[in-house]
Structure formats: C-alpha cells, structure tokens
Image (tube, rainbow, N blue to C red; front, side, top):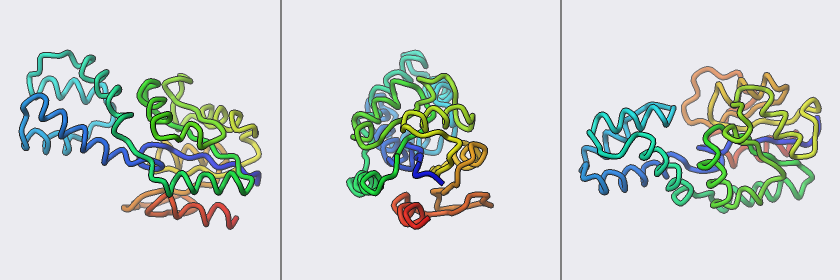
Length: 209
C-alpha cells in the first residue's frame, strides 16, 4: 500500500461542533433570540445548511432571506473554527515520515476554502479536494481520486481515509479502495478498519501499517 492518507475536515481535523456553538450564541444575541433560541439552534438537526437556514428564518420570522443568513454563516464560520496545534503537528509528522497527506471535504466552496486557509490546513497538507469546488461530493469515488492526484499519487495505489461521517468517509473510502479509520465516540456498527475517539489516535494506526 502506498503512503497516502486522506482526511475529512469538519469534526475530524477541526472542531466544527464547537465553532457552531459559538456561532449559535452570536446569532441568537444579534437577533434577540435569548437562551431558548441558542438551545433551539443547537438542537436543530438538519445536515443540509441551505435547508437549515430556511427553517431558521421561518421559525424565528427573521427579516433577512434564508440565502442571506446562510451566506453570512459561511463568511463567519472560517473565523470561528480552530485546528488544534497537536493536529497540525500530527500532519507534519506524517509528511516528514514520507506520507502524502490530503483533505477531502464536502460543503460549499467559500466556507470550506475559508476554513482551510484560516486554520492553516491548506498549507499543512499536500493537496485537497472540496465538493463545492469540484462539483461532486463524498462518497463519490471521483472526489477521492482528485484528492489523491493533488497529492501526487494514484488512488489505485491504496492508502487510508480518516473521517467522522460513516456514509461519506467510511463507505466512500472503502468504495475508493482505501483502508478506513472512523473518528467517533458513538460507533453504531462499523465496517471501518479501525474506530478511534480522536483523530490523533489515527497516527499510530497509519504509521504502524
């Protein structure tokens, strides 16, 4: 197996949930929604953000359009997300050991590219592929192929995929011919080669192969 490892970004390399909590508090304060509004936003479980903001506008009867609210969210989130220094150090160690390291991320181009740049991840990896740029999403094998190529390796040579979303990252990674590491604290079933609670635990599994 060639030395290729691809990582998901949101809630794998960066703490998206923590950033969303900070955004929810800011948003509720700006629109006078109070603590109940914050709790409602945090309990909202709509994975597609465009639909989420339609529901937010409807629920709170807000003046801005759903598109305006969503655009403001995408502009703000890159300023709120963080990548732990330990994660950046792990990526640097993998690259120093000869691994080609890439990122495969779903999501809108402006939001995801902003996060990559703001966190330093864009410079910490050999290549990345963002769904909003490429016009395809995980689990489509084609986006894994793009990321591998940007890292200078063919996807056919194998490698690792590390991520928190079972359908997108684990099933998608397996379909792409990659070994998989699922980052989750609540595994329900698996299908992954390994399960870890924190992305930092993946380094030993990758390096020990």
